[in-house]
Amino acid sequence: MTSLDLQEEALLWKQGSAFVFGIDEAGRGCLAGPVCAAVAAWPMFGEPPTDFLVDDSKKMTEQARERAYKPLLEATLAAGVGWATAKEIDRWNILRATYLAVARALEKALAQMIELEIISRQRLTQESFAFLTDGSHPLLSHARAFVYSAEYEHEFPLLRELCTKELREKCIVKGDSKIFSIASASILAKVSRDHHMTTLDKEFPAYEFAVHKGYSTAKHVGHLQRVGPCSEHRRSFTPVSEAARAFGMV
Image (tube, rainbow, N blue to C red):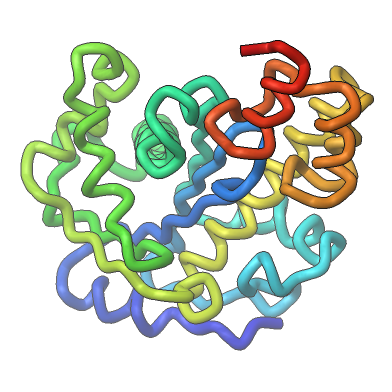
């Protein structure tokens, strides 16, 4: 039940990349909560599923995303979800924090592959991997700055081995509506983040995070203006900083 095929992935498989990952993120434009990134690789020359929908997560209903989430996790060859917190977003800015979340997602996927004996640590070579990233910005290539930083390198023992040379990363504008692996990552990132925001709703009920998931809706901004920001709000985003100033929280 998908209009997406695996042509782009098949081309890379034929060129010798055994593992082709789609990369996407969710939550970059939100006022609260973490940014979430996901990576997803499909079995080589496998067929797209026909029993659930895979599409750009933004085009899917919440129910359709939920239906696809668990089957996708079970059907992918490997997948990983990574996060960067609101505090990390304020520290690094949203784009650089997204790089960090992507690195964390791929590290988890590589660890999964080794645990399941899909690949050995000795085969973590650039030639075996290719990456298809949603948008025009090479998220993974820029993530190398965190992978090799003194502060974060302990998080990435596997990715450090893989990133010794430039990785093959192709950016595709609106890739989440064109490329199967990117659409898969889009769904995983979106649903994972929605679940997280629903959990935060229980901790911070005044903001109704379960309703708007942290996005800059009129309801969310109204709550900010009424009670001020909480620890999960991104202070570097204008509506949050304005509310913080109004409540003397700066």
